[in-house]
Amino acid sequence: MTPLALHGTGRATGFSEGSGRTLLRLRDPADTPSHAADAALIRSTDHAVMALLQGFDTFVAIGDSEPGSGANGRRVLLDNRFSHLTPGDILALDVPTNRVRVLWRSESNHNSFLVTERCDHFCLMCSQPPRNVDDGWIIDEIYECLPLIDPSTKSVGFTGGETLLAPDRFIPLLGAVGRLLPHAGVHVLTNGRAFSRAAVVRNWAALQHPDLWAGIPIYSAVDTIHDYVVQSRGAFDETVLGVLRMKDAGQRVEIRVVLHALTAPRLVETCTWLARNMPFVDHVALMGMEDTGFALANHAALWMDPLDYGPALTDGIAVLSEAGIRTSIYNLPLCVLPEGVRPWAVRSISDWKNDRPDVCSSCSAAGRCAGFFTTGKTKFSRGIQPIAEPVTFLGR
Image: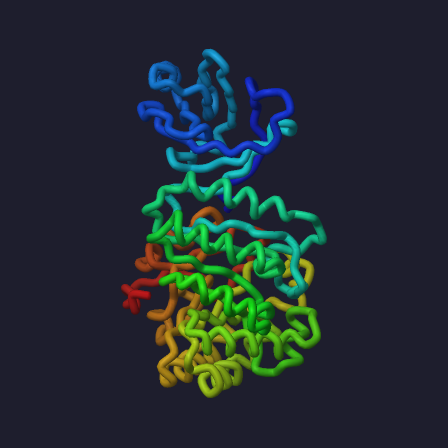
């Protein structure tokens, strides 16, 4: 299993000397370009001819296709690993190095922008290990990307690093998202500590976005366990204060609990604490661990077969459901879950890093299963097996 290619090296010609990082929006060669970033997606010689007739002067060709030529023609050749690209996708091309990154996939429901690689946590299972780098340019690039996205898009996510390390820059960006993508639900992953500051919550709430969510982790009801998992003393207290301030301001909050050997054994206690102290949160996600990044380095301390925390998952969901808290299970294949909690499971793993092994080919529930991460080194539960009977879902 390999992730979908979202970055790599191409071959770019025809770009002006001194060109740096350039955004390209892929278009059908039969369309008419309407923006300076528009580039015809070429898969054949006929496509190249058609694109020239339509007035394109930028071409992105896949595989052995001839990218075309013409006055001031800019050409990018990508290998067949990028054959999944479609019109509407947005690429960032670093001209000096020929490096290409896919920023947006028009046919995906899992588009997220990485806001920064910096973070004030060093979570033991972090799938995107933080780096102390100056990457403020990323927000500028997202601003540049937003007008290129179909305004009818239904969802967009933001992740990090810690998205709210620079709230004075990030929150205005969310305002731009609301204006340019008025139909999109917005989900922001954040450790929530910035919300302990009243001004940050006030500015967030002032956006008055109708479908803006903050996904905030609380890994344990025990403050020292949470702080140990995130490797930051005092994180629990600031996170809880942030959640309380956000809900006091009427904002949508999702609590996220990643399940591994340090958190799963006390899951029922954590769910009970949430039910008693935060019954007003909008959603709780109980999540399987992505075995990549820091999770690989800490594998021996973190790995726990989901079969072994199945009873705790059953009891935890019962507690949350009785409290009236909307709850879902993310990132865990159906066959490792107790039958009683399978209706709470969601196909949550992003399509670009989601696959399933051959053993799943005869499973009656394969089309509704979360599948498996293709990133890192997948550790398979001893419970992986096809499901013979259909599974009823809750429609989350």
